[in-house]
Image (cartoon, rainbow, N blue to C red; front, top):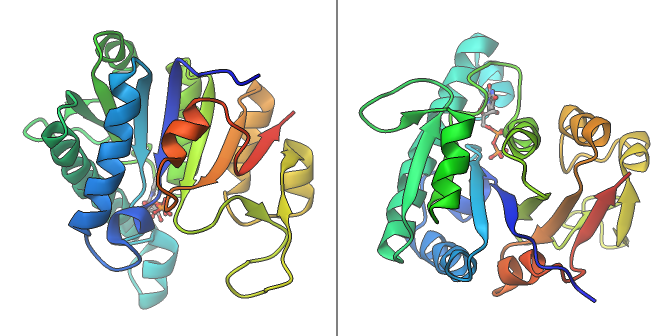
Length: 237
Ligand code: UDP
């Protein structure tokens, strides 16, 4: 028996936007927007946290000599570009959206106001959270867990590009890697799995927020995971 979720937080990492390259790939974004529109049209309340790895990752950029905190702000600004692009593609699919950012920029987005975000969702609008937490040294995975908790999402859905869950090694590099169907938060942390950062997992564990890692590249998977079908890897207490 599957359970359809009523309110979900979907995390889209930057690589999803770029289709593996720098910038935004319109075809990929159009496809994902259609799938998201499909679940919103069925009455599911959806909020999205957007990553920015298709532009900058602070930790990588700081290797080139830019101070880590500045590099992280550049990373956060990248997530805003993705948020604007996603909002536009979703609106073309007929979904009403609002972008809220953790760094205030009134011309392009509302500030992050959680109660207002909930109100938007109740009215059938999809809310996109950009600019991460507004704080360097954090990741958008951690923000996804925090936003999910604050807006009362039932589950955190981590959409991955081309990987259908959590493996014990990188399946792209190691063909003998095996997939976990289910993991506890403690197992995830003990195995030091790199698919999400430890801060995000610890926050979810401490507040009992289930996470599903699933493959976004497989058409129809957003609807499947929202319908509670057992796909990908489920991480629970
Ligand atoms: N970032 C940050 N604080 C946050 C969220 C993100 O400083 O709260 C910066 C950080 O440099 C990160 C970049 O923004 O590398 C892009 O986010 P992330 O790496 O999480 O994106 P993803 O891997 O999901 O594409």
